[in-house]
Length: 266
Image (cartoon, rainbow, N blue to C red):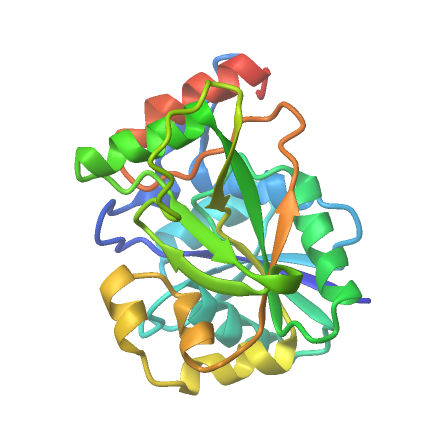
């Protein structure tokens, strides 16, 4: 099946303006922009037919083209990455069986997360889109809880039911456990990884749906699918020793750089 990977990137982020152009220093001391590291992560995915950066900003376009990325320009009216992916697909003329949204703030996304996601969508014809979830160990869960105590969004959690069909996503830490866990002990909390694989017809319908109260409150684009009764598959992925974090706040930069140093990512 033909798979298009879209990396949506905007300059005017509310929480972190100019985020795609922030430099991240790797294990060798080389500094690369966030958008470049996200593109390199996408290029490592096996089976992808095409990878494009979707943006509305000439500064991001110039940077992306400087390292060889294909760029699709989109409008400034896109409210989130999913809407930008939908516009990018329309601008490209469609023609793909699966469209992957590899968000531009997740440079540590392992290739197998995306590969497993696509396989999950193919294997579950009832699902209209799929998104990866990673079981938290005690240390990660403690970090999420500490972030919330300090009014930081350290990550999103997901809960799902039979067949791994999504029930809810939240910036709060859910489900509540009321228990302390060892650093490497598995927990019942799943970290939602901000990657999506859509069926094209579902993606193209998304911008036409009304933004609901849950999406408004949480600020999570994937809740629009749930609020419109769409079937979302949560695909559990394995870290395989890799650390994972998204760049949501300026304080995440040193955290991600430390992870890259520890994992030897140049």
